[in-house]
Length: 585
Image (cartoon, rainbow, N blue to C red):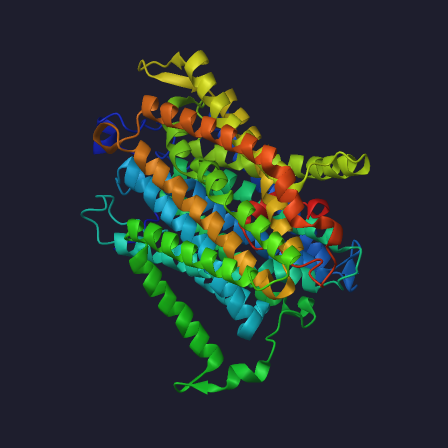
């Protein structure tokens, strides 16, 4: 086992000889420094992203160190949480953009297996916050849970830098370190994701009019971290060496941890354990607090084993999802008629999640491989295209929030189910438009391979992002708005399961596309699958719009009263958080 801190040499692997992966340009990976005259778009984009990140850090350091309690009209704790979450997103999205390519090109997994691993990983990342949020609410408090999660995430991202000898998954024992890294990231996400956005809300009274703008600032941190993580960390990983990209992601997470530790006084006592004395009680010879941390570490061991058996993850998700659904129905039947109808409406919305996210998350799986091999990228690294979605979110989320507000003012705002149906239609159109572009406008490269114009990749991400903005924040808001108080956490858990199921569906569909020639995804097979996905999504989305008046009736909005859920925290889902604008909550 060795930590690869050298420049990665991109030779031609066995899979490349089969034509499965394109060879990198010679200027990448063969020297530490490239003549500035030879810089292309990727190099300049990474430099600009670095400059933007540095400017934000300077402004943030200035804001946090002011002698005043508030800066720019907000408590300084908000800016501390902004930067802690920004670094967490920097590390997470930088690693996510590299993962599928890393599995195929470094560990030499088949396309199908790589997609399935990606899907299983994504689904577990979305499931663990259910337990992490429950432990924080019941015992640890949000601050301790976020701190513990950040420690685990830092270890996980740094372990990703152990890349072994490059001989492939069948021969290199360092693969066990890779599985351990994923396990640390999954469990760490469980403790952090569900709780850090809760801390933002706790900085303000429920009636404080600044809450909306506070969440706007916080979500800007999420998207800034997501975009720069891809443009910097993933750039290093793809063009210089995997260890450089993963290592920088780990350093980013470490910086987030340091910011959070040093910024504790800025939280003003928020996020502490609900019953501090409870954590000091002895269980099995340990304080309860340390016992809970030990359970978290034991969970790392369980996930380390589970992530190696991706089909088992799908089976567990299916069985637990059915059990959870039956339990929700059982609890709903105990409610009065209107509250029960609202639960049934939420179940309908939750059942849309696996379809939408199953298509959306192709971006990090099969579409990442398709972009690498079948898109005329003009020398731009494949991972760069993972930054398009957060950049579109930054640009479009305020426009969508304004659009919903304007439509509401003139009495034309679509209902929540109709918006979600439109989101699914747009997700389907993203695939339809991309396949049409690939079939109609592709041209041959020097090797004779058909390459899709990059314009249609930008159109794919545009439509998938607008679809996300119609579905994700709307669904999240509906869970908070329609739940009776004692079922709020249960319904959010169900929402998590729906999203987790979508991630696994994404990996599973990608694995089916990987059953082509020698385990590699073919261009024709991928386009055929994308076309089918797009048509199904458009059809389902139209059907949802058509039945939306009935679902809206089940929501009984005319008799909905405020039971104290107003302003409740976001679920902690990064894709959802990226699309949430407070005005649409």
